[in-house]
Amino acid sequence: GSHHAAEMTAAMYSFMASCKRNHINEFEWLKDVFERIQSINHKNLYQLLPSNWPKYRPK
Image 1: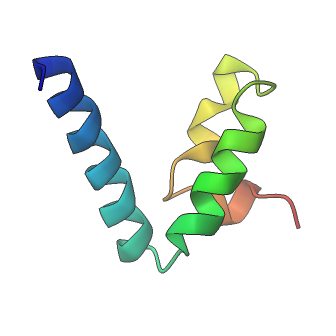
Image 2 (image 1 turned 90 degrees about the vertical axis):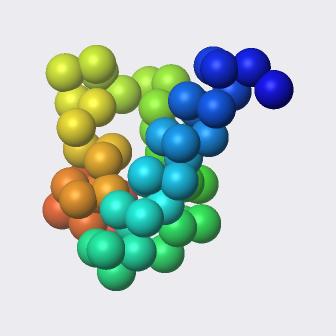
């Protein structure tokens, strides 16, 4: 494997750990991120972070 792949894997593990720490269903979070990431303004990407997601996710 490449160094880049290792970094991407570490990032995903970090996001999943953050979801668990914030009592967020990892699948629901990841599904929402994949659905919204293409259309969200780059200034609002912080809304997709697991720690912020409950406040900004679609209801």
